[in-house]
Image (cartoon, rainbow, N blue to C red):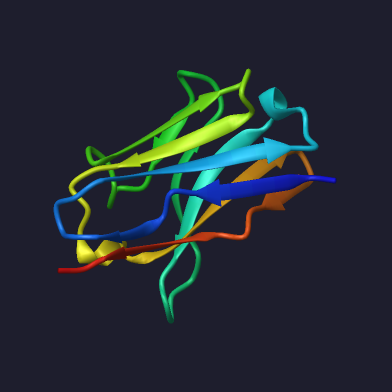
Length: 115
């Protein structure tokens, strides 16, 4: 059974930081592109960042320079370090694992940026 379990969301003031974690089980983690997506109320789900190897990392323009994605294949875990958070970053953040036709999602974790 494949599971992607996110954690680390919460309420933070503008300018603050959060670190999201996604622990994967039931997959050969090292084979998968791992990604973070987010969905704000009334909006479509959008890409935040993806990571395969150390040289294969992508960020959306809206988070470049503020967010950092990383992974540890030995721990089957991917992280999203979010710095200098803005109210526009408020959303449910989802972890995604993709390999060929296989595509899995976590349950999401809420991030709220508000003073």
